[in-house]
Image (tube, rainbow, N blue to C red):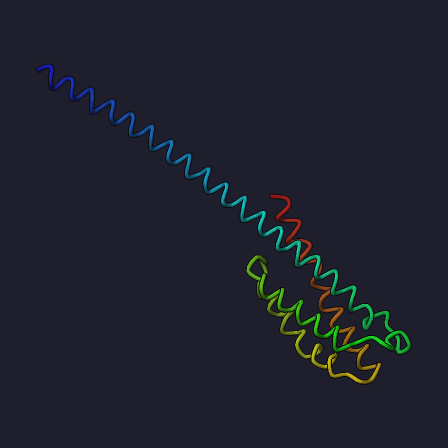
Length: 158
């Protein structure tokens, strides 16, 4: 063997070792980047679910005016049309953020179930009808609260 063959053979081996080392570094960098991206997405999703959770609690508080604890005398002066409008805004917020929920079909179902009682609440003139529709809406949203809280807790545990 001549010296040139030995030198090129060694250079090839060294080149292969360097290439393997660089490939490992690139793989590690890609894994770190993916991990960082996932952390950022989790933080973003946590913020969005926190917003939905907060708005859910706010709308439930608003619905108490026409919901389970309402009476004909207590709802005098309450603007049921404004409350219905707020529920529609809440429904839009849910639709806007439904992609962050594991149970997207439940969000769709809730929004669909809210349509009729919200329309009836907005158009109601009779105190009993206002209270009846208010209770329906209150119960639908209140039953959904635990799912939102669970999703939020699951994200916080990551």
